[in-house]
Length: 240
View 1 (cartoon, rainbow, N blue to C red):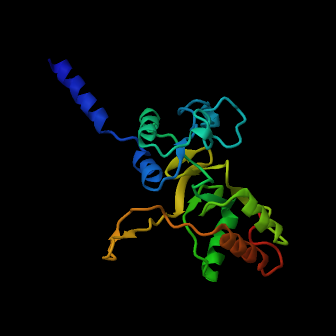
View 2 (spheres, rainbow, N blue to C red):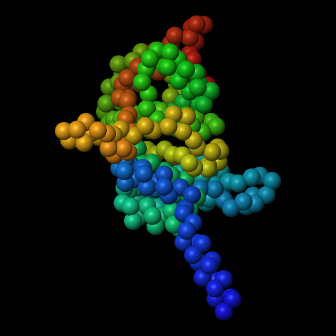
View 3 (cartoon, rainbow, N blue to C red):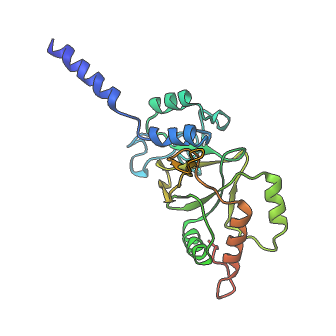
């Protein structure tokens, strides 16, 4: 009898434990309608001995350990609540991967040191930014969705674009907080601020009802280029 009661107690405790990322990933997928999927993640602790934890994918030389889709692949990204719950019930600590482009946010990313300088300069210039995702090596500035054609037009119109910039648009992906990858912990340098709708005829906000505000890619890119080219020594503030 005591053994049966103990087993029931353990089962109740398991049911109470929520996957580590679940609340965040459900907010992204269902409240904000950002398509997500679980990233491949890292090997179990001790898997590589003194070499630390590597990527859980089959590639021993993986360039972005833990920080990419594998199984399922990127095309499986979804906003379906049942699918999201199933994924994270089976892999509670899986990194949260956002499929960028389409109706989902896109991003511009920079090396961490350059990005910290850039954000300080953009704040000084009065540029309004959206959420910023940070890892120890790179920071990503989330922007409103853009097409590859729009990005091409913007880049073609500019004389000089910092070579350290990377673009995460259609067909790309980005790891969101709170996730752990080979580069370290993924966190919000600038947390999302959900916009609230107003109740019809009353002007009262409905809390947390729609996705965070995102700036236009053109405005952010213009500001980054201006910040880069305004370095006092004639160099670039956004260089590696």
